[in-house]
Length: 114
Image (cartoon, rainbow, N blue to C red):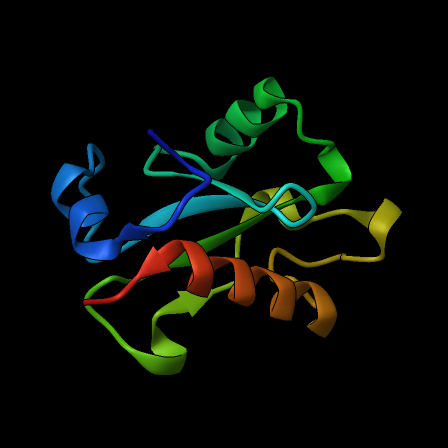
């Protein structure tokens, strides 16, 4: 598991990963604090790490990055932790375009491509 709050190169994250998912890394993003925890077996584990750092549940969303891909294929917004009827998200996929855009901005700022 890696906690990211400052820009880091994606290739460094990829080379230090502990999970061995094929071409993918699970992440949880705090859209308020602009923190990321990634590289664990479950999005829920990443979420728990953010909660332990002081994040608020309603600000944490799950996604996946695909470091060997580019453009729209680099990121998806699908995780079990995203099912939140209380926040009007009834799907594993993040439906709110504003939340998706916020996550994309944070990821682009913190995860630097080579």
